[in-house]
Structure formats: structure tokens, C-alpha cells
Length: 251
Image 1 (cartoon, rainbow, N blue to C red):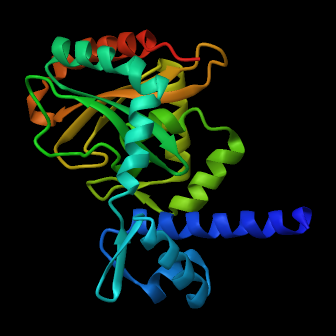
Image 2: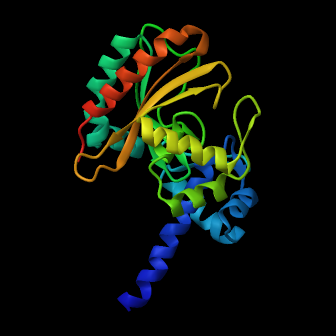
């Protein structure tokens, strides 16, 4: 009985996670039929899952629409307070923000995206708010510092997922250009991005590596309005960011 029940239980768990991921990615509340379609599930199955999640505070219902529930915050808080990576990065980000005057952030990869999990503002803070936990593309800006560590199969999968790529200025980024950018990041050990994800923005990033495997586990980034950083400053900023990234020690 146990061997027969386990696959069914695991499939139910996978479906619930699929539904949650649909709501996490949505920029607005969604109807039941839309959630089912995006999750690739039957409407009746989706409705049962939503009912359970709503009862546990992971989903909220507003009329005929559903959205992510407040109790999802607790899981995020648990990650932020228990992650060795976040803990090790905080003093480093603080020092980096003080030395450069810019906003210092830590990003981690999640599938074809990246998420900001720690941030310290400097004396010249960003002019827009990027909340902790915000999901951003992996193929633009600081995300490429994380993408540069992908293996060939992972890179092909990423390109398949994102489809046609363009930066904030509307310029097309071909797969060949993208691969060339990643190779350059691997060789020089840092990245400077201008107007890639957001117009008028500049970022400098460097990879944080595991002390045991050497794999890239995160990226440290400083970001600013492009007009707040002179061309003469950029070389010094790359040194500061690389120094900060190497100072974060995680297994």
C-alpha cells in the first residue's frame, strides 16, 4: 500500500507547487480557469488545490480571483534568516555600499530567473525600489553573471525558455551574442551592464563561489542610475565588487 500511495502523494505535492508558482509569477490576481491553464491542470483539480492552500493561508481569494497569500511570507522569512549565504553576505554588502556609495545587492539563481535576497543602500541609492524576493530575468543585467556558470545543457534550456531576447533599449540579443557575453564574463571575472534590464541603469557584478566546489552560488552587484556613475569610476567599481564577492565565504 505504501509503495502505491507514495507516487500519488508526490504528484499531488508537485501540482500544489505548480499552482503556487503560477500565482508567484502573476502580476495580478488570476481566475481559476487561468491558473489551471498556466499550471497545465484540470479546473477541478486546481480548485481542490486552491481550496487547501487557501485554508493554510498560502492563497487568498478576492471575489472570483486568486492571489498569493500572506503566509507565503513566512517561508521567505525563514530562508532569509537561516541561509548561510545571506548571513555571510550582509556585512560584505554593508562595507561595499559604504565604500562605493551605491546600492549593493546579492542575487541567487532560481531556474531561468534570479532573485534579490539581500540589499544595502549606499549614499547614492537606486531611484527605484526593488523589493527583496523580486524575480528578475537571468539573461539581462546582473543575471548574466549567474548564467555564465551554466553548463551547455542548462544554457540551451535557458535559451529555450526565454525565447527571443531584447534589452531595455529594444536591441535584439541573439544566442550567439549572449554566449559571447557569458564567455567574456567568465574570462574577466566581472560584468558591467548598461541599460540592459532598465533604461538609465548601470550595474557591476561579480560571482560568489562555493569554497568547496568552486561553483557560482550567487552574484554580488552594485547598481545605480547611469548618470550617477562617471566612466572613470567604473574600473575602480569592478575592483571593489570582485573584492566583495571573494570575501563572501560559503561551503
